[in-house]
Length: 319
Image 1 (tube, rainbow, N blue to C red):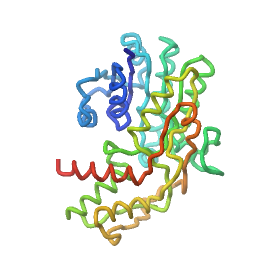
Image 2: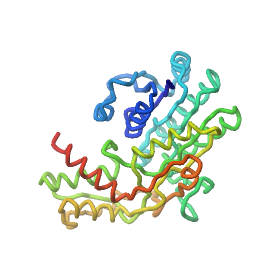
Image 3: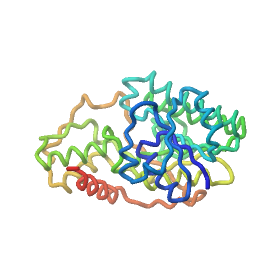
C-alpha cells in the first residue's frame, strides 16, 4: 500500500483526490493548518474518517522535514495555496510569500530527507496570462497578470529547477479552471449557480457581475485529479497541461444557468467595479500531451458539467 501526503486536502481538489486515491488502495495523510479546520468537503464525500490529519505550517521547513521523517510518504501532492486571483491583488505579499515558500520548503525537505519521494505541484493556467496565440501548450511563454499568477509561475519554475538540479521526481500539473459542487464560494461558477438559486427561491433580486465577455477553459475536478495521479505513475517526471481544450464565455454560462432555472436576464447587473485591473480575454489549452503520454481521456462538454453542478446545488440547497 502506497502512502500519499496531500496538502490543501480540505479544498475541492484535495477532497476529490483523496477519494480517488482511497479507491486505489492508498493510505492518505492530510496536511491541515493548526486550529479549527473545516472538513465539510471530506465529510460530504464520506471519507473524513479514512484520513490521518497532520497539523503543519508549510512555511516552517523543520515541521515539514519532521513529517517526512516520521510518515515516509511515497507521494506528495501539493495543492495548498492562496488561490484567489482577486484576493492576490488585495494581499500580494501574503499570496507571494505562501505560494512560493511553501513549495520551496517541501522540495528542500524531500531533497534532504528522501529523494525517492514523488512530488506533484499544482500549477495554474493563470501563469500564462497575456499570450500571442492559442491554444496554450507546455511551451507557451508565460506573462502572468496577477500576484497570484506571479507566485504560481515562481513555484512552477522552482519545481522544475529542483527536478533538473537535484534529480527529484517532481511534476507540475498546469491546471485550467475546473469546477465541482465542492468549489469554494468565491469562485465564479459556484457563485452564479448559488445566487441564481437564491433568485429562483425569491431570496435575492439580482446578480452583480464584472466582465462576462471573457472566455475560459472549464473542466470537472473529479476527472482532473486523476491526471494528477497519472503524472506520478510515469517512468519519467514531466509537466502537463490539464484542460478541456476549448473555451466558453462567462456570458454563455450565465445565460444557460438562468434559462435552466427559469430566471430572466433582466436580473443580471453589470458592475464595472468588479472588473479586474488586468484580465485575460480568452484562454484555452492543448491537452494532447496529457492525453497521449498519461493516457488521460477527457472529452466532457462543460454544458454537461453545468447540468451536474446545477442538479447537485439544487439537491443540497436547503440542507
